[in-house]
Image (tube, rainbow, N blue to C red; front, side, top):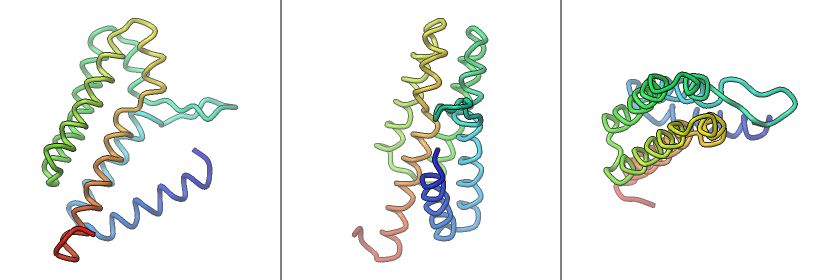
Length: 143
């Protein structure tokens, strides 16, 4: 991520965290950290490519794929607890399903894990949903 996109991400995350109740803000921060560790913890030197624990665990046949799917499912469970719509939850499940299918392909799946970042996608869906909920609750209707 470039400096500008990092700054934009941080400001959007900080703005969302200040608008959420304390428990929801703490949950959002925890899920943000989880998504970062799973999908983009380390940058490959000299490139814009990042990888995380998802790609590394994918190197372990079967057990690695099961572990990453379970970890990704935690993000979906927390999103449900935060009141995300069923439609958004289904989209999040689809992202995890696609990631699991990609990961199941030997070797090519490991490369695919580097480029398909289900947890980052799901965090973006969660942020968008929470921002929409905040707009509705502050105005009484959606803008």
